[in-house]
Amino acid sequence: MTSKERLQSGIYLLERIDASGQRRIYIGQAIDLKRRRRQYDNPPERDMRHIMRAIRKHGRATFKWRVLEHCAADMLNERERYWITRFNACHDQRHYNHTEGGDSGGALSAAAKAKVTNALKARWANPDNRAKHRASMKAALNRPDVKARRALTEARPEVKARRKAALNRPEVKARRKAALNRPDVKARRALTEARPEVKARRSKAAKAAHAKRTPAEKAKTKAARALTEARPEVKAMRSASQKRAQNRPDVRTAKSARLKALYENPDERAALSAAWTPDKRAAQSARLKAAHARRRVRRQVGDTKKQRRLI
Image 1: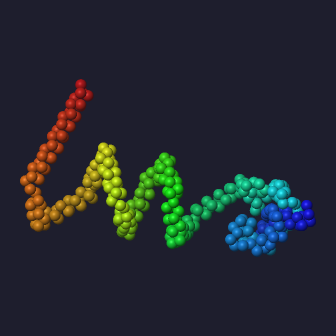
Image 2: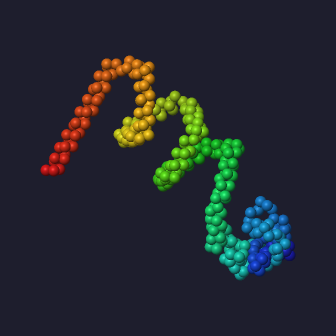
Image 3: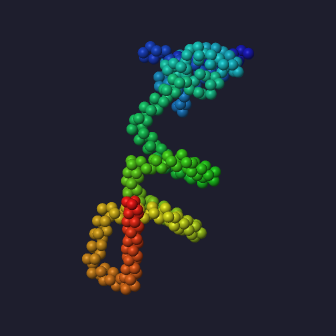
């Protein structure tokens, strides 16, 4: 090992005595010790490593620099682990080392993990922090350049395929269904969708999307909808939904009010009377008779089954 290498690379220690008299240290390695010391003398604002944040917070004058050992560059990892273990700089929460050094791959110690977890929980428990984060994310996502980049990324075929595969996973579908069925989520969605500006935006987007579609795409959608609506379970669901809607007190009251207003208008009564032709009357009479006949058959079948159970 040359004298130049001996002076350049090695293991260093930063030490600070806090207000309570506690000793807090940080042990690191550097290929060029002089350069590393200059970095600590003027820590850049964009460097968010914990030791740099501590230096900016408390001031460089409160930290003492000391070289623990000069060694070759290929020995730095091993010697850094040795010194961190010797000073117990990783597992003691008072100190600034969060890893065991060397080839640890950046794995945090249990104490460091607990410290990070507690700090994040405390941060996100504050409603002001959450509101600031939502506002900053909303502002960032609404920037024109960010929107343009996202549109280009989402238009790539491989991104579309990955998203489709992820959304079709059974566990993702189950989580989405459970989230959408939560009462608080339903209430928030109902409030959002009832806002006039939201209705206007959705209507405008739907019209624009429909205008862009080709006749072949429209025909394909129409055929698929017809197949879906022809399925017995879909018919049953729609019928049940319509019955529930029609039986709601507010719907029945509104319908009764509309009919009363309609019949109180002489012009409307005359128009309805003219439209009610004999053929339509006969067809309506036939439909009602058929419906009554079906009900009688069902009642007879039900009585027969009841008699059989009694026997």
